[in-house]
Length: 280
Image (tube, rainbow, N blue to C red; front, side, top):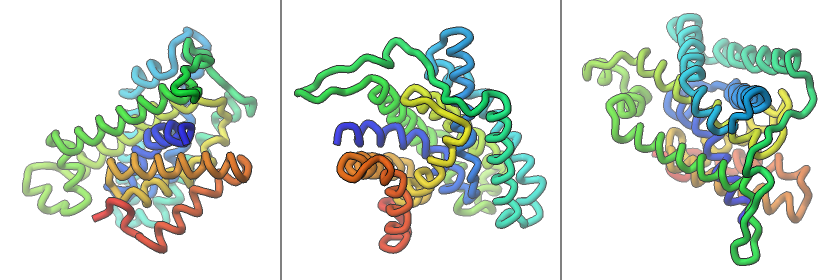
């Protein structure tokens, strides 16, 4: 149970970008896991070359990934969304990005597992007879902080409220003096920046290879749908539910079954409550 709760905090960090881009902008960015892995490899390079903590690297590189996300959305908008062809062709566009990034990382770093060394990787604390590893605790706390930060950004700032509004009524947003394309660019950039920081958390927990992104596609969309499309608080709750469910499944039925949990929860949520736990 403790491992599942800690894993849930990390899953929340991984899913925030999808909750923002897919949940609020209605853009099915299936390349999001590839940006997470790209963030992992960026943290690995900085840790291997300079000995920097991966989470610190993730924070330092968020502006760079924000710019990358803004550029990707501008290309997507000019090529598909502006022409009204974002449904199928846009999906192929993001699949192409996913494939290109995975192949590029494989050609650059190979298919060997990469990991980082930090001061807290091998440490743990004992609470009431339960051992808690820092390599899970630190990413969990950072994931919760990311969730709280994004929640406050969306609810307390002009650009955050504009992002919430762009998914509801773009005409009303224009009347309030905001450009929907600019707002979507900001939102997409924030989503990719969150993915890069989540990637730094991922490589703090376990080694990664370029194809690791495939393990998180189902998890991300399952958490987003279960929590409620665009609900940041719901994302955290759904991530904890998935983390605990995966941990219990791995404990009692074997680790090979844990990956099936996300798709099972996704199908169950779509069948029982399509709006999610906190959907409107």
